[in-house]
Length: 124
Figure 1 (cartoon, rainbow, N blue to C red):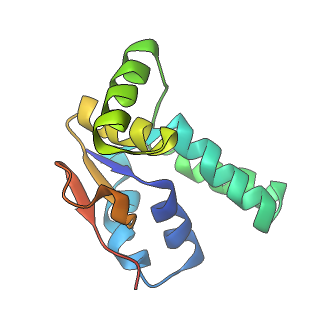
Figure 2: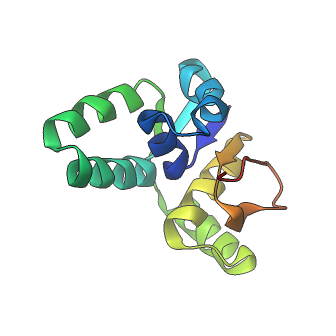
């Protein structure tokens, strides 16, 4: 199972230098988990940069993975993880989601360097 950080989705969609790194987990839809916080962040970015219609089209593609809602238990796990690893709210939720499902977390965000269960490809 895989969870892709919001920055990874945006990198993949924009065809950025790390797009190939994120292609593997994103294109393996049967093993892809999509936290609702990722839907929020990616959709917000898309509406701002390419418009609502394009954003909705891309979110529909993200929904080909399994959507994981933020529930009370996951919220508490994310809060603990955020404190321990000094992560922002959405980052803690996404990593906690991956860990709760035994998934690999794919990112290009250096804040995750050295954390268990993370595949990191730094931005060039």
